Image (cartoon, rainbow, N blue to C red; front, side, top):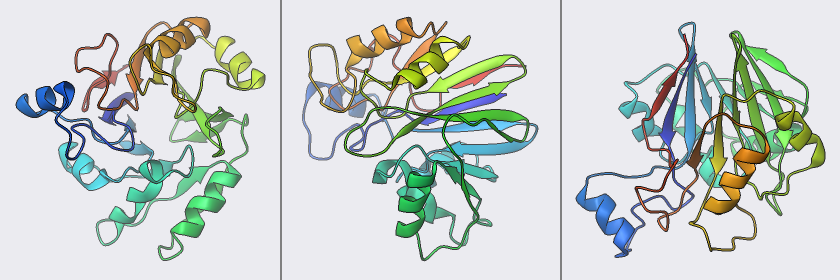
Length: 242
């Protein structure tokens, strides 16, 4: 299994449009960016997209235009699903998988685009191309949001999606009871910032420690996060397990 971070930014992305802060200037000068957060999972010649961000076209081109076989959504915020329309006239529109409330919202918005819809209950594992996925509820008020557990050939990867640190007990028990090799964790701001529906860096580090993740990368980072923050993921960073 191979996982590529297609994007590691928040809804705004970095550099932020019209921003002249130190971080945006540094990213611009270095020719770097954080596209909106999404992950590409590759296994057995199949490609699974986690989140279809507004930057999907650019992300797929960067990744050498893989044919996407399935898409998974964590919640109905535009930066996590709205890029699904980019599949129009590019390839057969892939099937989508999401918890029922998420599927209802996203498919209603995308009513103009016919595609297979697979509502999947939370905490119930399902298989896609040899990878076992499990949606679990997190806490991203007021929108119903889920994280994702991925298991393949003895390797376990978790993705929190957008969330506060105080996730439901059943979800924390699921993560703490699993041997997590790598965690992709929401960290929208540096330590010291109080964000009502996301984690800052200190909270993300504590969350990763508390669930026992062996390693972790911060994603969904805003332009406030410096490029060199420890454990910050970066666009097109790839992780491979053979």
